Length: 233
Image 1 (tube, rainbow, N blue to C red):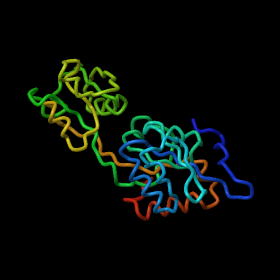
Image 2 (image 1 turned 30 degrees about the vertical axis):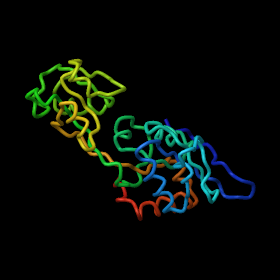
Image 3 (image 1 turned 90 degrees about the vertical axis):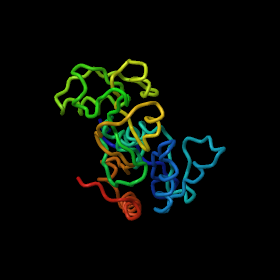
Image 4 (image 1 turned 120 degrees about the vertical axis):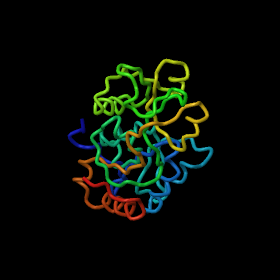
């Protein structure tokens, strides 16, 4: 649930409220920092090799960034501890936190796919036998997909390398993110169906956006002007 009111943004005496932004560690970070820099907020200290800080101020002092795991970005935004964040669409689809999707940023592109052993003979999802085992980190998205196909499967949640599922025989198939497909190929697997495509999204806390006096919208507009496209409601 979204809190009745967001946590009041950090302020300096006599200054405007400081905006908090949740940014994901890993593959999305460098491009996320670049997009906020284009909007006038410099979080480049997060990219320094010796940085160990998990909360850093922008160079201008008008904002601060929280460095969190990808899956935690929408949680911080949903509960109002961050007013804005950048997160993969795959996380939004899987965890379904009540955040506002504002801009499709276009980077971090990949696809959620069903994959099987190349030697299996399966070439589409409906070739899989009913009640077969499917391993995934994204069991909610996988369940929705197979339900839509009216194909009952047994989902196994794995937190690590799901490619091992078909290799070891724990599952006939996997549902996982695929970027280049190289990891699948090197492990004797092939993607046979796509569930959806995923890119990085700028998200916001709905109540903070409604109560915004202008600063948040200005940032969203600047990021949107260099981003891929606004997300249609």
